[in-house]
Image (tube, rainbow, N blue to C red; front, side):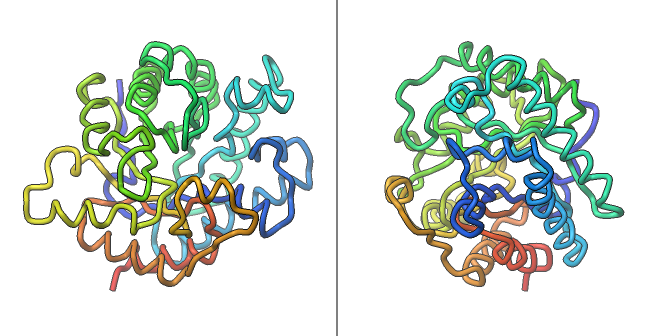
Amino acid sequence: MMTKRLPQMDRPFLQYTGNETDLIFNKGIDLPNFSAYPLLEEAAGQTVLAQYYDALISIGAETGAGVILDTYTWTANPDRAAAIGYTGARLAEANRRAVVFAQQAKARAGSVPTVVSGMIGPRADGYAPAALMTADEAADYHRDQIAIFAEGGAEMINAFTLCYAEEAIGIARTAAEAGLPVAISFTVETDGRLPTGAPLGAAIAAVDAATGCAPAYYLVNCAHPDHVEGTWRQTEGQGEGPWMERLKGFVANASRCSHAELDAAVALDDGDPEELGGQLGAIARRHPHFTVFGGCCGTDLRHIAEIARRVAAPT
């Protein structure tokens, strides 16, 4: 049973999930299979990744926002980890290490409100999965990683870049079994629909119907505001509906490119940090129940600082 209300339900919180593109394109660090968690095995890698946590905490302190400290484990699931030699006990230890690392950052945060989150990603390509699981298959697939996060003291689960409802249903059920609140984040294409073609609202409604509204809330990530604002504006003044009320925020890409274009890119499109912050600030004003904002692909700490300035104290 969930006994604790997550603090980000009631005040602005920041989230940064764009570390991988920043590490690869801006810092020149190779990440096999787009995986950051192997960096935690060495002191130099720990230093680099700690800087993201500490900078996020500093931005929170400056703007009055809380911060979500996601583990660096978006690709630390059996299929994607096996491709770089992480299986069995080695993969389990990598997930445990990541939770401890996030907890150490929380201990450095002082008075800044923080939440340690176990991050999980989709089993397959979040943009174009080769095969879709049933909800039961997804629950079984993600169970071990979620259990490790629960045993390690994570305060919640964040499931990012999901592209179909059944995987989200399985994750939500397994997180509930583990006693952890879960936030489900879907990604959308340039038309505001999931990569499978399903409307965002239909996916959220399907997950809630199948799980008894188990997720604490929903997000959209790995998309640009231009990809959703048109759809969301159409709901204004029309009652929006229960699914829109279940959304709590947006973790945005810097680029307006489609997922296919991003996959093929050889250079980073980092957009305009000030413009992105302004767009998310406008969304925060139009949807005052949104409280979680941040940056995904192509963003760096410049974007996060601008987003924080605009959503923590919107003008």
